Amino acid sequence: MGVQLSPRKLLTIICEASLEEAIAADLLQSGGHGYTITDARGSGTHGRRDAIWPASANIRIEILCAEEAALDILARLQESYYANFGMVSFLSDVLVLRPEKF
Amino acid sequence: MPFEPVILFFILGLLAGIIRSDLKIPGVLYESISIFLLLAIGLKGGIELAKVPVASLAGPALIVVLVAAIIPFLAFAVLHNVGRLARADAASIAAHYGSVSVVTFAVAASYLLRLDESYEGYMVVFLVLLEFPALVLGVILARRAGGDTRWGHLLHEVFSGKSIVLLVGGLLIGWIAGADGIKPLDLLFMDLFKGMLAFFLLEMGLVVASRLADLRRAGFFLIGFAVLMPVFAGGLGVVTANVIGLSVGGAAMLATLYASASYIAAPAAMRIAIPEANPALSIGAALGITFPFNLVIGIPLYYWMAVSFEGAF
Image (cartoon, rainbow over all chains, first blue to last red; front, side):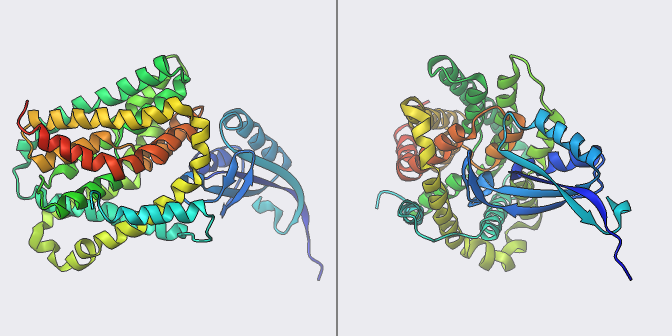
């Protein structure tokens, strides 16, 4: 029995933890059907984000969706947050089971 | 010892951070201890509140909140007009200084306890009332030149934030249950309080050490502000306490409230409400300078002011 895989996009956003609620709302409005959030730590142009307390905590948000929704989300992020917040996002091609979920 | 011994834990954390020790307080412990401290402070205040007629506090509370509004306005004027900071940065820092620090309040309470100096237990009500008005004023100051604010989001963030929920919740539980009702919980909430505070201060020492780099960005003006602003605000607190007839201990506590700068509620609210403000400046000043200054020098100084000026107004 073969496994049926379909192409979708995986959008990954790494940003300040304070944005969690705002971005989660944006994602659903832009056509994302769900997301996964994990706590993250790291270092970059905004210095070391060591999650030692809430103000220096990062999160990593992952969304599986169609390309159109992913581009819509990226446009929103660029407009609303890129100027003032520490944020990195990238899009990759993935294969998923049950494509109707995404 | 001229200061409260529990702050030695803060200094330990600071040193551990400076020598880059691998010491780390896990995030869940930080969260747990802050929940404990907020709830315990609320409960203590609630028990004391049950001993006085609540209606008699309305007048003094109104005066305390109105006078406190001077602090963010003055801070903004100094930072924006004298210090030439951008409007958003000045407003965000003003909000931090107008709001209050719960841990500084707790250290001041331990300091007075050690000196056997009693204070009005319902000060916690003032702590709650002083936490949020400055956050709203800060946003208004930032937006006078235009720009949109998600007010609904900000107000939700402030009033549903864990510090307000736990402080007010603890106050109400303590008030309803009274000292006898809370007695079975004393072992946890009262006896362990100082140990938990020690842990929290250890963590804050580590956090401050990790923000020391921000201070270089802050510059001398902001560093001077972070020392002089709390001294002025502390003086304002002593005067106000005398006007509303608080005890010497109460005056020292109100001075500490006025002098303290928020570094938990304010950074979270300002990050969302004034995103263009640089958090390194406000947190660097409030947490990097004012918090340790208040712990080591401020609290004994405000107590001294309260003793010296008792009944002078």
